[in-house]
Image (cartoon, rainbow, N blue to C red; front, side, top):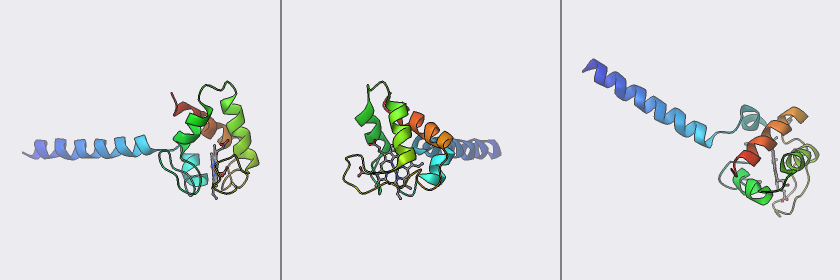
Length: 106
Ligand code: HEC
């Protein structure tokens, strides 16, 4: 009985970890981007999966997205203006996020 309970608790823990991962941004994204972005719904800025769809099949997608994250600005979403580097991301962070975003369309 004690074992069965342990397995139940472990399974619940795994399920929780799984769903956090599925929704998950790279940790830089949590700190610098999540105030305005989520993977699958619009917050202040567009859902990252919508950005992925916008750039799907473009060969310089990662470089373009990274450049936009670094420069900030407006990119046709009509949601406002994104601050350069979000809330303090480095260029390396922008690159990590650009790769993550492009990966969402695969
Ligand atoms: C203060 C809010 C805010 C933060 C923080 C923020 N963004 Fe944005 N972001 C926006 C808004 C608003 C837009 C849409 C601009 C427009 O209407 O075109 C946007 C657009 C984008 C786009 C679309 C670019 C394109 O070419 O279409 C990407 C990619 C993006 N953000 C990534 C990020 C990443 C990565 C971070 C964290 C490093 C981040 N954003 C942090 C507000 C934010």
